[in-house]
Amino acid sequence: MFISNLLKRYKKQEFIFLFFFVFLIVSTLNPYRLEYFVKFLILPVSIVAVVFPNLLKEWKIWLLTSIFLVLNLYFNYLHTSNHLFIATYFSWIVTLILISKDDFHDSLRISSKYLLALVMGMATIHKITSQEFYSGSFMSFEFLLGLRSFFPIILLWPNFNIYIEENRSIFTEIFNKNFDEEMIHNIVSPGEEFFIFLKMLSFLTIFYEAIVTLFLLIYPRYKRLTHILLISFIWFTYIYTNENSFFSMLCILGYVISYKDQKRFRTLYILTIILMLSMDVISFRPGFLKY
Amino acid sequence: MSKRLKILKIYYIPLFIALIIAIAQFVLSSNFTLTRWEGGGFGMYSEPNPNSSRIVGISIKNPNGEINLRLNPPDNKLLYYIKKMKGKKRDDWDKLIEDSDRIRRFPKYALTDEYIRKISNEVLDLNPYLKLKSKMRSNNNPITVKVYVIQLNMNIKDNSIQTQELYSKILNI
Image (tube, rainbow over all chains, first blue to last red; front, side):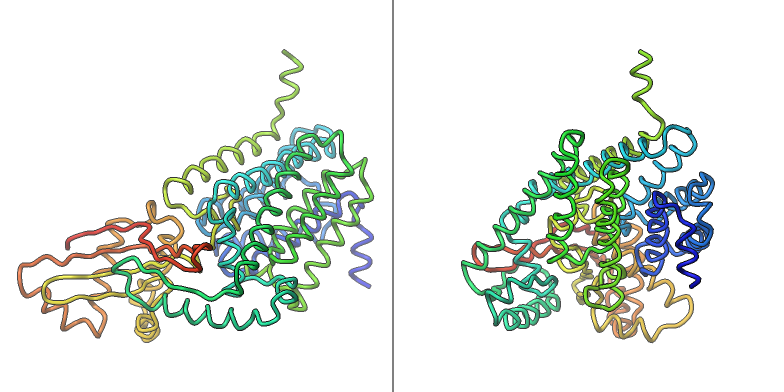
């Protein structure tokens, strides 16, 4: 009853800011990603913003959040996840728009579009320039050690868990050796077809990221297609990567980009965040506290 | 001119900063050992996570003896001794292990001479090495300390994991 009454107080367009602050509250539960003292600063501000919806568009709340997030980047630069960098930039963008008193939704839509294009563009550049990624070695490393799972692999190679177990013991052995010289250790894999499969998956990921970046840059022409691509990219990648926090941040950006003209996608973005949170809570695909 | 000024809005500043940080991170990760996962360059999942692919270790040598220890992820032997410690000593070790995690993520920046001096002194002060320490100090031979970061590279072509020294620093104490 209390929650339903509370939700009624939020204006539909500001609903996403509620998720942003919930996202920050959840981030404070992760033991590594936020500097210890910053957690104690961010937590009360985020709780106040969630409980008092009229403060969600108050520039003072956003300015405080932005300053705390910058403090976190400064003191915790080498442990801050990329989604917290995005959260920091987003928070500053909202603060400055609120201070500038320009058209809020238009300004936020344009800024978020470029921020998302930068994120996807940089992710593409990193993958294209990483020999380990485009050769398929990175994906092999992750799947063969069981660091990630992808259900088609289990369907195609039903005994895949045997390879994982064997490779994990090889891996433990590697970690327990002294490293006076360079060494080569053989690992076990299902064979050539497996590597071809992973190479294709790697290329598909690069292609998907590049195409989303491109469509974001030419957004005014293909608005609907851009959102379809972004949401399908999130779900496609979510199947084999538990990056719930990063995907939630992409959904928040996607939501504000869809302001005004692409309203139907707003529900989809919100549903995506809720589904990811739910799967995290029931430990089906934990991610928020892991990364 | 006024149209141009209209385009340059104050809220674009975070975007420019984001772009600068991302480019700087790309340069640092491509040439200066920073992992692609950290630093705000959005390069996660383009190479193995340092938590599972980078190892920080220390080697302390002198004609009278040798010590090899894995600092991050910490050796079981090392963890056993750290868990037994209390008070300031424990805090110092926790800080050193925390710093070794930074070294794992960005060796070129985080591995300093001061860290090598501190960690080597603490390692030599550990119970099992106390006798070796006095032996090492008994002659005038310097003790050579090497802190290194090992990278595990998977090669898809020959189904292998290769261990390779990514970065190291040697100091005589």
